[in-house]
Image (cartoon, rainbow, N blue to C red):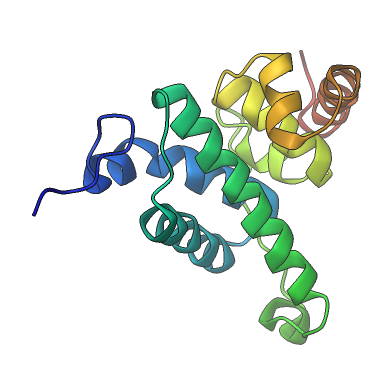
Amino acid sequence: MSEKLFAGLTYEQTVRKYARTVGGVCLMRLKNYADSEDCFQNVFMKLLSKSPEFTDENHLKAWLIRVAVNECNSFLRKKRRVVSFEEAVREEISFNEDKNDISWALMKTPQKYRETLYLYYCEQYKVKEIAEILEISETAVKARLKRGREKLKAIYGGD
């Protein structure tokens, strides 16, 4: 029996190649490693169970990011109904405020700016692609990038 291919990649190759991207999207959206891991696993389980056809690797990557965003949204909707461990013990996730790494500052920006900045700078998507992935207008993406940069600058300081 031959293994299913996703844009020419085996399932294992796909997970290895896009783990960082999907993990980053989940972490930027949820700000919690444990929850991010759950959504990460769900994304790749959906890939395996649904086995969609992809035209190329860009289509595959965009699909994975869209599913990751949807998984995180679904998780956040469900989370509203329960008290999280962090809330119960009143601990906030702390990131090392290393001036050479701005990820801690990015995590302190509001979610809609954080995910847009992450897709633009870390995943290097163009405005049009981000608009399609997040299902918002290009104008909204540009506005989020502008406001997100301002918020990031206020938190991080400097240029």
